Length: 115
Length: 111
Image 1 (cartoon, rainbow over the protein chains, first blue to last red):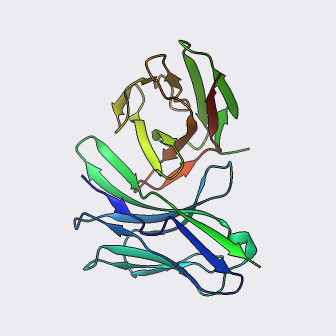
Image 2: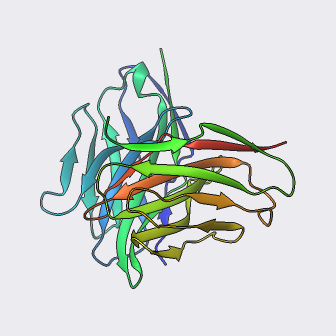
Image 3: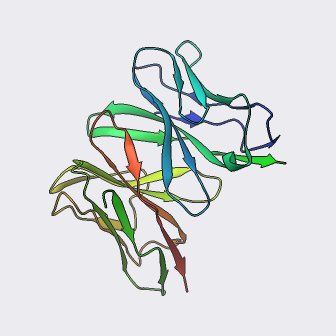
């Protein structure tokens, strides 16, 4: 069964500093990869996705993630964070199973941006 | 207004009571999902449905039941057999490549 590991449960970071959130997954078969963001008491919002093609994917608000097949990783980065980036971030991996598509989530990384 | 609507936003359950959480979508997505979120544990899949009148158990289906009589609706019932129901419940839908879109969630607490 697929598993997703987010190594850091919490990441404190100062405003305008860079941040990297690490994500590793277990399966080497063909997968789709996602990062979602969750603000307090809200649902999850899709931040970015890797489906195929270029291994570097970018969001409209400055985040980027790189798919590394050999290391089974999909780390998320932002060169300069804002206070508004304070949220919880989830890495997820999708794989096709006999019963349909399943999305497996990591445990989440809580980012706290300090002024 | 398009999207996924979960109701109610907050729900309280008495011991021994069954409660039903609503999830409605107007995105015309075929697949729908229910997740449970507990602090520090990420999201865990309860049930999912790829098409109308069909659904499969996820990783933690015990104590829950679902139905999928209409494409737009996928209600989740938390039965009295679920001994620890306090959690944040999220509904999601998907059309292609398993890109899932989420509702705003229902927070369930036990009285």
